[in-house]
Image (cartoon, rainbow, N blue to C red; front, top):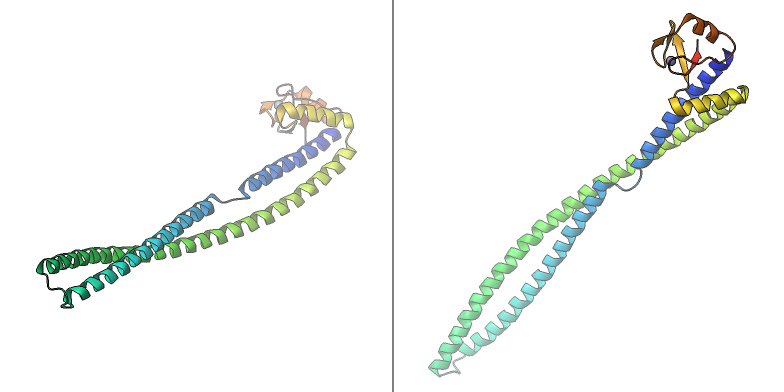
Length: 231
Ligand SMILES: [Zn+2]
């Protein structure tokens, strides 16, 4: 009876150890990189690249406009200088000026469109980087909470393992060995008995079995094979 009680206490500690170990493993899985943060970083990076590309397009459009304006100015100067008398040449120059003006207007429209896109992209970059900052802050505080919880669990576990050592030291080694073997098959090797019923398999135990279980030797349930413990 005493041994059954000791084994039951050992089992209770073992169950606590197992559940703490499971909780610890679950927390450990949550440690590390956050998918949400990685996704936000990728989105921000791609928007930043888009922004830089727009900047390049903006510059090249501006250069092109500058070139065109210079060309246009020099032809207009020539056209209106009064130096050219030949009417055919004047007509050709006028055509050239008209063509360059059309091209300049087109380029100016394009530059304006790029400017609008740059503005939109600037807003996007700001929004995305704020979102990323928020996510990173959340992730950081979650990680800290996780670490704290894990440390607490480690302490609990080491206390429980110490408790188990103290308990085991008082129990007959053969009984512990028997308990361990049974535990491999049944998960819970010891079953409490209440109102004549084995709590391991919910079977009513015969009176003779109950009487034997009250004695000093270990008695197994005739139905499920667990060690019977009568509190
Ligand atoms: Zn049973």
